[in-house]
View 1: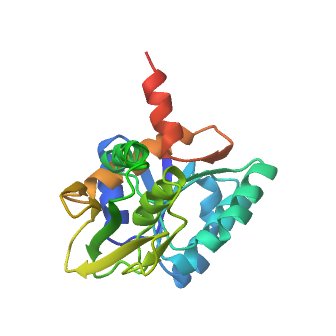
View 2 (view 1 turned 30 degrees about the horizontal axis):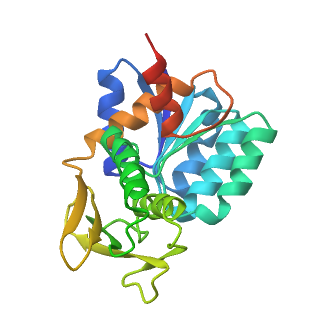
Length: 243
């Protein structure tokens, strides 16, 4: 495939290396406004674009891909307020967008585990629930998109919880999310159920960016020729049903 990389930081560079190992051609990289002005005309030649930039840039980049009729895989988080408009635009205009807060296969299996544990713990009100996430100091959004997914899945499964809040919860209907930033941490997420007697803790730790790069590449390969709005569960479900 001919791939355009929108955003060429550490994730973009990791995806570039992996794409070439898998036999693809990264023919276009765009990392700032000046490069958009110089290279935007080439975007329509891409078979797929992969977008890892900043929350302030993601929506404009997605719309550029829609205009060029290029399927786009998006890993940027922090633009949730625009999600429904983008989803509607994608579906109504027969475009293709694959979005995930985290492309790691392990993280998405962790999502399944989190939902299952929440369903088990729903009737045990003596356990308080909290989430912690730690990432590298260059991550711009906090809490992470992954932590928000974890919290929302808990809220859907546990009736006594109604919303998530940053840092410490003040009310019993809240799930607190603590965010930490440290030098070069790819990402760690911890979900904790704690009572006076014991604690149940599940943890996912990313060892490097390669897991996320692989997930993004699998998504890019999977959406070729498709139309619609897709997430990791669509990709993983298709793999489960494959012979």
